[in-house]
Image 1 (cartoon, rainbow, N blue to C red):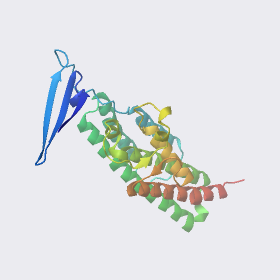
Image 2: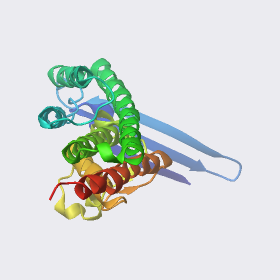
Image 3: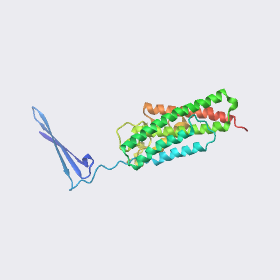
Image 4: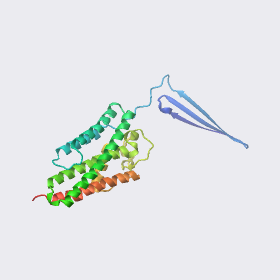
Length: 267
């Protein structure tokens, strides 16, 4: 007895105009079973239409504008505490924004994508360490020199720490989850670090939906205010640790520094 199974697939190998047929033939008898694979690749038409379509990577203007907005806020806040010199913040922002612009202008050049990812992760890591140092310094001032506290300096410092905390962790979430925005756009097989609620209602979503920077900014904001997951749930250990650190910084800032600032505001 002979059984034949054929699979027909259009656009095999990623080129429009190609049709490939794969046939698996099974010959059965008492003594042996033999399989034959017949494959045929034919071109529908006289010419190939073109290469794989370009992957539509996420626009970098939104995260770049978020960085600039935070820089503007920090410049406008009077007398907030900072461990590093002010010019370091502007230099760090420039180091991150330049690769973002390059990724946009070069339509997803892999070299610039890797540079962007590396710079953002390094910058965010350095700023998290700097923020922890600032919070520790302010708690030390409040604890050991309570009489010299300035309410408005404490309030502006707490706002600066909290806003920077949200932005930096949002950038980290954006770059860490499933290998970054380009990997998500290319439908990488990497496992997600967070599960978002949108896929639960696919009928209400476009077919190519994926989380963008604003989704991670919302995740960072909720983590800093609720001190726990809200709609997006962490799946991996690194996602949980990142959210734990962000929540701890936010909790210390709001409970200790803001509370002390409000307590000493002159009536």
